[in-house]
Image 1 (cartoon, rainbow, N blue to C red):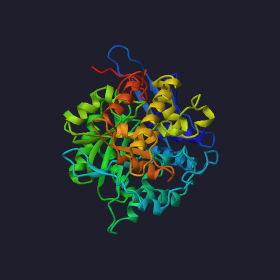
Image 2 (cartoon, rainbow, N blue to C red):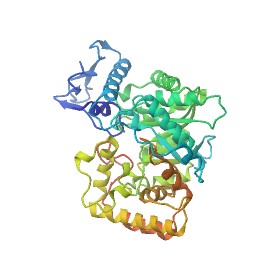
Image 3 (cartoon, helix red, strand yellow):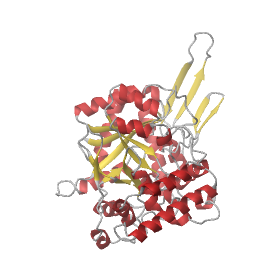
Image 4 (cartoon, one colour):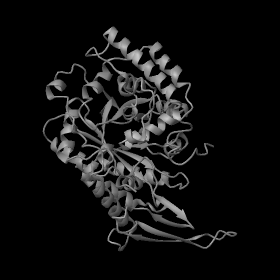
Length: 457
């Protein structure tokens, strides 16, 4: 297994699971350079009658010492992260290409508009957010200085909010350095948006663990109060997600958390959280012309009605919805899928339908971009497929912001341009007509990635 796979097995939203289940013995699969697994799990007894199965768990850290569950997780994750950032087999350095200059940014006539998250929130964010998943590995090597420089360039263009997570490797720490560099300088506020992700040992999470983890995130991000914590839960069969969300609510009431959001919940469980009194102001979801699950499930309508802002990621599917793939005879081959995000979104493409249908969508978007240019509707007179793909999502009911992965500075002005025009009704309808031909993805938000379509009763 590659080291990047080990990282994502531990802590990525792509759900690449590295666990095997043979004769009820679970063992974490790790690279040979790693000394031991995270834990051993032995199941004893059976379920005859009313008997409950007996579970014994022993946790190990990377020194092969018996450890607490929490320390074992932290030790294992840190080791995987360290290995990924140091690996040489990854694609060429991230952030290496820099074609946008400071003068280019300063000369941009369009400003990214801001929006209030939910009517009950005081949190104001830009409608385009910097996504920092790329710092978790699988997108090329980087230095802290290059990452900070990249953040600064996007910040100056108006992308003053940065989306990160506790599972994104060193991302929170680096974002924290950037936040600290702008503290007390009279600059526009830098707003870190993070996540509280729960993957393993879900039934054991308690108030103490939630508090410890939130305090660790506050320290990494260099803030007294986390502006937004977006809650993720991996397995609905473990029903503790409402309890954990309420633990986060308690910390909001204490002043450790500003606002609470969710990420990649389905509509049924999102409603459960709302009905339990969790004060949700946002929900981060994958949403694009290729992935309409938040719309087809009724989630977009419900969120709009309940003042919950949708934050959309994957709007251009790692560049698949761009001029780069227009008129390509064949979809990208495996050797071209050289980043974690491309591999993720290529699966979305496959679920959407044939490559011919994807090309029909790209061609339609290109025709609209050509018309936008001819009409002079954009700020700089230019427009491309990615602008249309982003605008299509921004104009979707309930969507307040989109999140873009910021591997380099090459697309800053392009991403700003998206906010200089809107789609005409007939243009959106033309895209809708292609989208209606799709085969998938089916189900609700993140059902497939969780391993199947969940019961919606």
